[in-house]
Length: 209
Length: 380
Image (cartoon, rainbow over all chains, first blue to last red; front, top):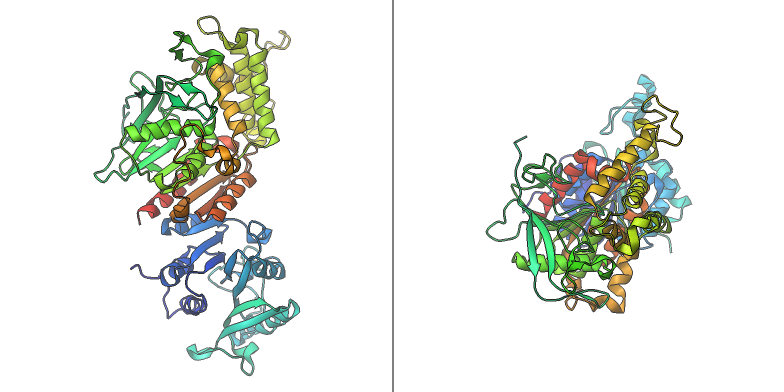
């Protein structure tokens, strides 16, 4: 069997691991901003999901095709009108929220076409980010999607507490969540000062009924 | 690049009557085809290529004494998108065509004269049934991939959907499941241009002078729709050719000369009646209704639709071009939607280009990357 490609010691690898736990076997999964398709490949091998990735980049499309991952070239900001209501069990937005122009609309769309949504959030309120802005005076930073302020695809900086407030405003229910704390700790519950201490979080969401 | 590889044109002759969708039959059907690359020991590396409106069985390599290679030679060959070192690539000329497969210019065995309009009307489904005879002749009951652009995409979809057990996958480029009013309208203007030419003579011009004027106008209209406004502007703008403007209404703009050249080049190699038959077939093509209607078993189609329950094991790749206004990208997205609904694992790519519909013949690099990756993943 092919290796999943997600290294469990890195943040992306650990997030893949959490998502894998949440996805029930044989589900239909839509992965928005699927990159090279490694999460979908992992889920196909370990959870036998029927997955489709959405990507805007030609090079990523080619890499997905080479992996045998179904991929759909589109700009997520144009919406998910291609898909009918409830056509997926899960819609994933992993390491992609930062590049979305209208995040609320995408989250609503995710919960329209999917029964559940998985979203990972990089917390801008994390202490190290605050310190960097305080001393360095710069908003943009070196990330996986790095670039200067004017050309980085990262246009949305959101803190954990702001994101959670958004979910409440949109009547979105959090079914499960994982919060990445310092020293490699992961909590499934919110903790004191989490807006300061959480580096990254990943949510399993559904519409409030 | 290596030197010229020669390919031999081949013809399969069918003795038994061939039944069409319409209920008519063709006796003594000829099927022109070519093969590039070799079939492997397990006979599972065949790839079927479907040509577009004006194409032929000569998709790649060279004919003896012909300086020009086949119409998709940029995509078919060693190391190319359809790698002939790995795949056995097969292409045949469509029914009602004029490049070796039976069509209106062929001799009607009942009269010994060219059919003309006595040739029965054909459908895209008839075109693929002809190829089923070819596959049977070649001893192939399994094809790795069926691929085509434009009208070739229509045939690929029809064949794949009628006989899902025959194919692992399909690739459909710059095509549609049914023509829009605009697409029908352009074809109708082309047909009218041919039929308005007095030399057309009700289709009975063989052995006399063909309706070259009408056919070349039809081709000129086609060429306007095949490229984008931007490309046409960049290529020609308002440039003029020659200084002598005294002759009134003589072509003087570069774009006029270009269309004139395309028209003249086309009448040398294409039959006007074939143009009528084939454009009608693609105007009448409607994939969704063809597989759901009661007529699905007509003609040669007793086995059509068998194995639909296994279509979920199949994969597809749909490619559109950003500046293609003849077969716009939304039609390709509809294709993806339709096949996803059937459970086929379909991928969609939209190639950014200024080349319009013709990009499927010219934008080699992006198509090659995608098709190679897609075909590679099939073996895995």
